[in-house]
Image (cartoon, rainbow, N blue to C red; front, side):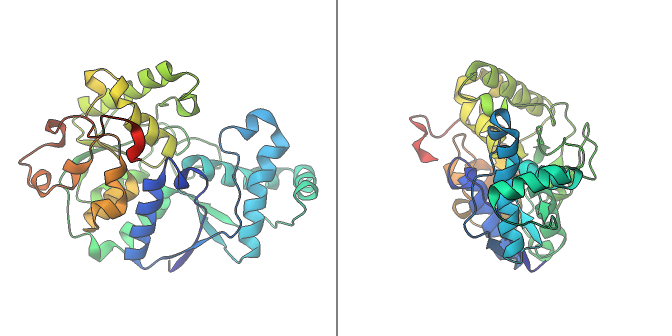
Length: 306
C-alpha cells in the first residue's frame, strides 16, 4: 500500500485533531502517500439522518463521487462516524437503484459505486503488518483496553470480518506495539456518543462505566478510533468519580506511532485533556512507574489545550 485516498472529515480538523496528526505521521513513517480528497464536504455524521434521509445519503455521495473522479479507488476515513456514513452510503446505493438515481439528480454528479472505504482499525493493521513492521522498535509493555464503541463494531455489511459482540481488529495492532490487549466487558458499550452536550450527565455516567471496567480489567490505558468516543472518555474525566479519572485515552494510531519511536507531540499526545505523557515515558516502558500512578488531567483549567 503505497498510496491511499484520505477523507479527514470535519472532526479531524477540530476535536479529533490528534487522530489526524497521528494518522499522517504513521503513514509517513510507513511510506504511504495519503491523498486527501479535494473539495470534500461534511458527510452528515450523526445528525443528517435524523433530519432528512436523502440529505444523509447525498452528502457522503458527493464525497464518494469526488474520490472516484480523482482516481481514488480506496479511501481511508479515520473517523468512525465518517466511515459508517461513507460505507453505509455505498451499501444503500447498491441496494436501491431508485435511491441512487434520486440522489444523483440532487447532487448533479455521477458515481459508479466502486470506491472502497477503509476504517482506522483496518488501516493501522495494514501498516503494522507492512510498512511499519520493521520500525516497531519501541515496545511499550502496557496493558491496553481496545475500545470499539458502536460504529467500529456494528453495522450489517459496514463493519466486515468482525464479531459485533467481540471484535478483535485492534488486538493485532496492540500486540504489534509491544502491548497486551486486555479482555474486558465494555469494549463495545456506548459512551453516549453525540449526546455529549444535550445529555451530558448520561454521557458522563456511561463513559465513567467504560473507564471503570477498563481499569478493573487491569488496563493501563484505553485506545479508540472514534473522535466522539475519545472526546467523551478523555474530556469528561474531570466530571467523573474517582474510578473514571486518570485513565489515558489514546487513538490506536497514536499507540502505533509511539511504538515506532515517533515524537509524542507530533502524534498529538500533548493535546489530550487527561495526561497521556506517562504512556510515552521510558519509565513506564521499564515498569518503574505505572500510568495509573501518574494522577489525573494535566489540563486542569479550560479545555483550550485541544
